[in-house]
Amino acid sequence: MASLHLSQLTLSHFRSHKRAVMDVDARPVVIHGPNGAGKTNILEAVSLISPGRGLRRSSAENMTRRPEALGWKVTGILHSLAQVHEIEIWSEGGAARQVRIDGKAAPQTALGRIARVLWLIPAMDRLWIEGAEGRRRFLDRMTLSFLPEHADHALSYDKAMRERNRLLKDMVREPSWYLALEARMAEAGAAIHAGRLKALAAIAEAQGNAQTAFPAATLELQCEMPPDVATFQAALADNRMRDLQAGRTLIGPHRADLYGVFAAKGVPARDCSTGEQKALLVSLILANARALAEDFGAPPLLLLDEVAAHLDADRQAALYDEICALGAQAWMTGTGADMFTAFGDRAQVLEVTETAGESAVAFAR
Image 1 (cartoon, rainbow, N blue to C red):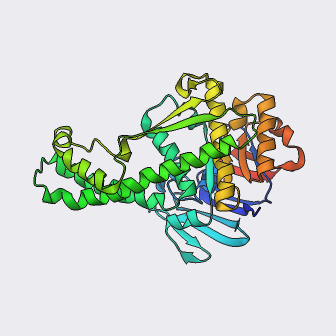
Image 2: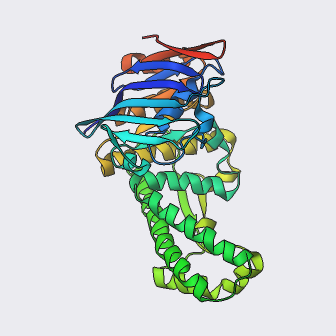
């Protein structure tokens, strides 16, 4: 199978890193160091090699190194499906980030056509017990990993819905003001819903076909969503009076939720123990990666922040074995190198230190 990996990553004035250059190979990358040293900042930089706002969902302005605030730049040499690309991502003066691929300006969505990036961070540990918005983001990241055009559908839907919601708040009742907006919402919304269902089907197949040490989750998309574009457009029109009273749109994919069940036990994920919830998340990320390896032709870049700290020694070893069997370049963080001894020589190790607010990166092996 073809490979997807970075051979070089350079950070310039990015968060705590004034300058860091990492020359790596296709093996997993272990990053260890004390809390606050700048480990997660490296993962965030890698996450920008995909459409969207990155793993922290931060603005470009917030990513710049302080106190200089000169702007920042992330560059990488990306090996993707037997091709090599030079990626440049930067922001100046807090402006929206810019992208160049092989020296040519490109939209962020173009990154999704040459790279696939998945991540699991501590903030996602509450996925099953927080509000539906977090689960929708998780589902949409999975969908985007299979369908780069999902981002365009989401942008189109959100823009049309914001305009429709403004009309609703202003109590505009004239139907002609709504027709074009509802047509755009129906077309984009149907595509969003279909994409989510396709992603869930791929995840279910990947879980069912794999022998893994991590428990499978049965996933269900819960959404009041008509079956096709015309029916959805009609439903939006029929629902205008109720929406006028609420001041917002009450039906559509923006109201969806993701329901998960620990398959072997038949227990809803929200009722599982903290350890079981974490294991289910790891299982879904691995299933997503396996499905992408088949769909895209190469396993994705995996960003696993402090994931080993929540797993016992057996599951740590099982996770590392699965990553290596998959052939993925996983970027993993932890406070100590001892968490990753089960990798042996199968991984390369970086140590991150911090002095006076400036991070430094060195190869440990």
